[in-house]
Length: 81
Image (cartoon, rainbow, N blue to C red; front, side):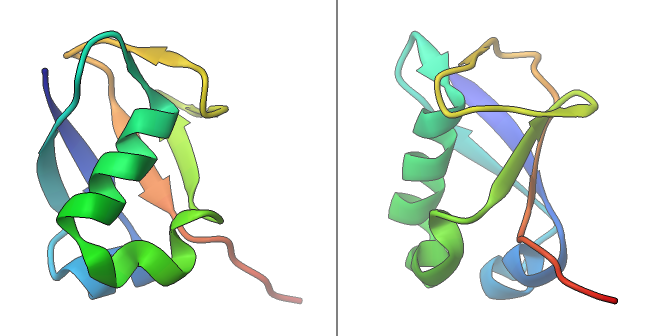
């Protein structure tokens, strides 16, 4: 299944694009997104385990299932004060 994934902040900088399309085996999960992104874009490896992945408007766990029309976005963890 092909899935569009939006990238923000450091993830966007490391990949060089604000959105990418990845191929996922079915049944697809958020964890599969993390693995596919790391495989396709090795520059993401240092932050892959800490990426926050949202489906729709909510952050999702790695076991959350996805469909081809899922709205997926990746955010690196942030800190601030």
